[in-house]
Image 1 (cartoon, rainbow, N blue to C red):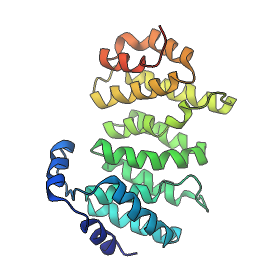
Image 2 (tube, helix red, strand yellow):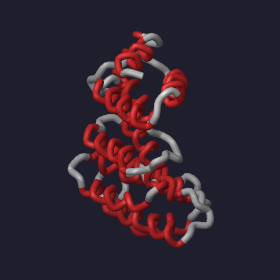
Image 3 (tube, rainbow, N blue to C red):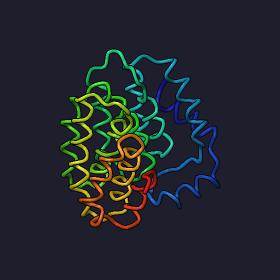
Length: 227
Protein backbone atom coordinates (compact mmCIF):
# COMPACT_ATOMS: atom_id res chain seq x y z
CA UNK A 1 0.00 0.00 0.00
CA UNK A 2 1.48 3.31 -1.10
CA UNK A 3 0.88 6.48 0.90
CA UNK A 4 -0.80 8.17 -2.06
CA UNK A 5 -3.23 5.26 -2.43
CA UNK A 6 -4.06 5.32 1.28
CA UNK A 7 -4.72 9.05 1.21
CA UNK A 8 -6.88 8.61 -1.89
CA UNK A 9 -8.89 5.98 0.01
CA UNK A 10 -9.40 8.45 2.86
CA UNK A 11 -10.38 11.21 0.43
CA UNK A 12 -13.02 8.94 -1.10
CA UNK A 13 -14.93 9.26 2.18
CA UNK A 14 -14.43 13.00 2.59
CA UNK A 15 -17.25 15.18 3.87
CA UNK A 16 -16.42 18.88 3.33
CA UNK A 17 -19.07 20.12 5.76
CA UNK A 18 -17.81 17.85 8.52
CA UNK A 19 -14.22 18.80 7.65
CA UNK A 20 -15.05 22.47 8.30
CA UNK A 21 -16.63 21.56 11.63
CA UNK A 22 -13.55 19.56 12.62
CA UNK A 23 -11.25 22.43 11.72
CA UNK A 24 -13.22 24.80 13.94
CA UNK A 25 -13.33 22.25 16.76
CA UNK A 26 -9.66 21.28 16.82
CA UNK A 27 -8.47 24.85 16.20
CA UNK A 28 -5.29 23.70 14.43
CA UNK A 29 -4.54 24.68 10.86
CA UNK A 30 -4.05 21.48 8.88
CA UNK A 31 -6.06 19.69 6.18
CA UNK A 32 -9.22 17.95 7.40
CA UNK A 33 -11.23 15.55 5.27
CA UNK A 34 -14.22 14.98 7.51
CA UNK A 35 -13.81 11.19 7.62
CA UNK A 36 -15.43 9.44 10.59
CA UNK A 37 -13.33 7.27 12.90
CA UNK A 38 -15.21 4.03 12.12
CA UNK A 39 -14.34 4.50 8.44
CA UNK A 40 -10.68 5.04 9.33
CA UNK A 41 -10.81 1.89 11.49
CA UNK A 42 -12.10 -0.17 8.55
CA UNK A 43 -9.50 1.17 6.15
CA UNK A 44 -6.65 0.63 8.60
CA UNK A 45 -7.78 -2.93 9.30
CA UNK A 46 -7.50 -3.72 5.60
CA UNK A 47 -4.13 -1.98 5.26
CA UNK A 48 -2.73 -3.83 8.25
CA UNK A 49 -3.84 -7.17 6.83
CA UNK A 50 -2.20 -6.46 3.48
CA UNK A 51 1.22 -5.29 4.73
CA UNK A 52 4.10 -6.66 6.73
CA UNK A 53 5.59 -4.64 9.58
CA UNK A 54 8.19 -2.83 7.48
CA UNK A 55 5.55 -1.77 4.96
CA UNK A 56 3.24 -0.69 7.76
CA UNK A 57 5.95 1.47 9.26
CA UNK A 58 6.64 3.05 5.87
CA UNK A 59 2.93 3.73 5.34
CA UNK A 60 2.57 5.20 8.84
CA UNK A 61 5.52 7.53 8.20
CA UNK A 62 4.02 8.70 4.94
CA UNK A 63 0.57 9.26 6.39
CA UNK A 64 2.01 11.24 9.28
CA UNK A 65 4.16 13.36 6.98
CA UNK A 66 1.07 14.37 4.99
CA UNK A 67 -0.16 16.36 8.02
CA UNK A 68 -3.77 15.51 7.11
CA UNK A 69 -5.77 15.05 10.31
CA UNK A 70 -7.32 11.73 9.34
CA UNK A 71 -4.05 10.47 7.87
CA UNK A 72 -2.27 11.09 11.16
CA UNK A 73 -5.07 9.30 13.01
CA UNK A 74 -4.70 6.40 10.60
CA UNK A 75 -0.92 6.36 11.09
CA UNK A 76 -1.42 5.97 14.83
CA UNK A 77 -4.03 3.24 14.36
CA UNK A 78 -1.67 1.30 12.10
CA UNK A 79 0.72 0.99 15.04
CA UNK A 80 -1.89 0.26 17.72
CA UNK A 81 -1.45 -3.41 18.44
CA UNK A 82 -0.88 -5.27 21.69
CA UNK A 83 1.52 -7.83 20.21
CA UNK A 84 3.96 -6.86 17.49
CA UNK A 85 6.59 -9.34 16.41
CA UNK A 86 9.35 -8.60 16.38
CA UNK A 87 8.78 -5.92 19.04
CA UNK A 88 12.12 -4.24 18.46
CA UNK A 89 12.55 -0.50 18.76
CA UNK A 90 11.26 0.43 15.29
CA UNK A 91 7.59 0.95 16.18
CA UNK A 92 8.33 2.61 19.50
CA UNK A 93 10.94 4.87 17.94
CA UNK A 94 8.47 6.02 15.29
CA UNK A 95 5.84 6.77 17.91
CA UNK A 96 8.38 8.74 19.95
CA UNK A 97 9.43 10.69 16.87
CA UNK A 98 5.87 11.98 16.53
CA UNK A 99 5.56 13.36 20.06
CA UNK A 100 7.24 16.72 19.25
CA UNK A 101 4.61 17.21 16.51
CA UNK A 102 1.65 16.91 18.89
CA UNK A 103 -0.53 20.01 18.75
CA UNK A 104 -4.09 18.78 19.28
CA UNK A 105 -5.66 16.30 21.66
CA UNK A 106 -7.26 13.88 19.18
CA UNK A 107 -4.07 13.08 17.29
CA UNK A 108 -2.04 13.06 20.51
CA UNK A 109 -4.46 10.62 22.15
CA UNK A 110 -4.53 8.20 19.22
CA UNK A 111 -0.74 8.10 19.14
CA UNK A 112 -0.67 7.75 22.92
CA UNK A 113 -2.92 4.68 22.71
CA UNK A 114 -0.39 3.13 20.33
CA UNK A 115 2.33 4.13 22.78
CA UNK A 116 0.48 2.50 25.67
CA UNK A 117 0.72 -0.88 23.96
CA UNK A 118 4.46 -0.56 23.44
CA UNK A 119 5.07 0.57 27.01
CA UNK A 120 3.13 -2.35 28.43
CA UNK A 121 5.13 -4.65 26.14
CA UNK A 122 8.40 -3.18 27.44
CA UNK A 123 8.11 -1.03 30.60
CA UNK A 124 11.83 -0.18 30.37
CA UNK A 125 10.71 2.38 27.80
CA UNK A 126 9.25 4.41 30.68
CA UNK A 127 12.73 5.81 31.26
CA UNK A 128 12.40 7.58 27.93
CA UNK A 129 8.92 8.84 28.81
CA UNK A 130 10.25 10.27 32.08
CA UNK A 131 12.23 12.84 30.11
CA UNK A 132 9.00 14.22 28.65
CA UNK A 133 7.76 15.27 32.08
CA UNK A 134 10.15 18.25 32.12
CA UNK A 135 9.75 19.14 28.45
CA UNK A 136 8.89 22.68 27.36
CA UNK A 137 6.34 21.06 25.03
CA UNK A 138 3.03 20.82 26.88
CA UNK A 139 1.79 17.97 24.70
CA UNK A 140 4.86 15.87 25.51
CA UNK A 141 4.28 16.38 29.24
CA UNK A 142 0.65 15.40 28.79
CA UNK A 143 1.60 12.32 26.76
CA UNK A 144 3.61 11.00 29.69
CA UNK A 145 0.37 10.61 31.63
CA UNK A 146 -1.86 9.46 28.78
CA UNK A 147 0.59 6.76 27.66
CA UNK A 148 0.86 5.38 31.20
CA UNK A 149 -2.89 5.02 31.82
CA UNK A 150 -2.68 1.19 31.67
CA UNK A 151 -1.00 1.28 35.09
CA UNK A 152 -4.17 2.72 36.62
CA UNK A 153 -6.19 -0.37 35.79
CA UNK A 154 -4.80 -3.29 37.80
CA UNK A 155 -6.91 -4.45 40.75
CA UNK A 156 -4.09 -6.57 42.16
CA UNK A 157 -0.91 -4.93 40.90
CA UNK A 158 2.40 -6.71 41.14
CA UNK A 159 5.29 -4.92 42.87
CA UNK A 160 6.69 -3.73 39.54
CA UNK A 161 3.30 -2.33 38.56
CA UNK A 162 2.97 -0.58 41.91
CA UNK A 163 6.38 0.96 41.36
CA UNK A 164 5.25 2.38 38.01
CA UNK A 165 2.06 3.67 39.58
CA UNK A 166 4.04 5.48 42.26
CA UNK A 167 6.48 6.82 39.68
CA UNK A 168 3.74 8.32 37.51
CA UNK A 169 2.02 9.85 40.53
CA UNK A 170 5.34 11.55 41.32
CA UNK A 171 5.25 12.99 37.80
CA UNK A 172 1.66 14.10 38.30
CA UNK A 173 2.63 15.82 41.54
CA UNK A 174 5.01 18.04 39.57
CA UNK A 175 2.19 18.95 37.19
CA UNK A 176 -0.38 20.25 39.67
CA UNK A 177 1.00 23.80 39.67
CA UNK A 178 0.73 23.91 35.87
CA UNK A 179 -2.75 25.25 35.27
CA UNK A 180 -2.82 24.62 31.53
CA UNK A 181 -6.23 23.01 31.06
CA UNK A 182 -4.86 20.04 29.12
CA UNK A 183 -2.32 19.27 31.83
CA UNK A 184 -4.90 19.61 34.59
CA UNK A 185 -7.33 17.37 32.71
CA UNK A 186 -4.59 14.78 32.18
CA UNK A 187 -3.81 14.69 35.90
CA UNK A 188 -7.52 14.41 36.71
CA UNK A 189 -7.94 11.66 34.11
CA UNK A 190 -5.10 9.59 35.59
CA UNK A 191 -6.42 10.00 39.13
CA UNK A 192 -10.02 9.29 38.14
CA UNK A 193 -9.05 6.04 36.43
CA UNK A 194 -6.80 5.02 39.32
CA UNK A 195 -9.55 5.72 41.84
CA UNK A 196 -11.56 2.80 40.42
CA UNK A 197 -8.84 0.38 41.52
CA UNK A 198 -6.75 2.16 44.16
CA UNK A 199 -8.96 4.79 45.82
CA UNK A 200 -6.81 5.18 48.93
CA UNK A 201 -3.79 6.19 46.87
CA UNK A 202 -5.87 8.80 45.04
CA UNK A 203 -7.24 10.15 48.31
CA UNK A 204 -3.70 10.49 49.59
CA UNK A 205 -2.61 12.35 46.46
CA UNK A 206 -5.56 14.73 46.68
CA UNK A 207 -5.00 15.37 50.38
CA UNK A 208 -1.48 16.51 49.53
CA UNK A 209 -1.99 18.19 46.17
CA UNK A 210 -5.72 18.69 45.62
CA UNK A 211 -5.76 22.29 46.84
CA UNK A 212 -3.12 23.19 44.25
CA UNK A 213 -5.09 21.75 41.35
CA UNK A 214 -7.75 23.67 39.51
CA UNK A 215 -11.08 23.07 41.31
CA UNK A 216 -12.66 21.49 38.21
CA UNK A 217 -9.74 19.07 37.84
CA UNK A 218 -9.82 18.11 41.51
CA UNK A 219 -13.57 17.52 41.24
CA UNK A 220 -13.11 15.32 38.19
CA UNK A 221 -10.41 13.31 39.95
CA UNK A 222 -12.86 12.58 42.77
CA UNK A 223 -15.69 11.51 40.46
CA UNK A 224 -15.54 7.82 41.43
CA UNK A 225 -14.51 8.25 45.07
CA UNK A 226 -17.11 7.59 47.72
CA UNK A 227 -17.39 10.32 50.37
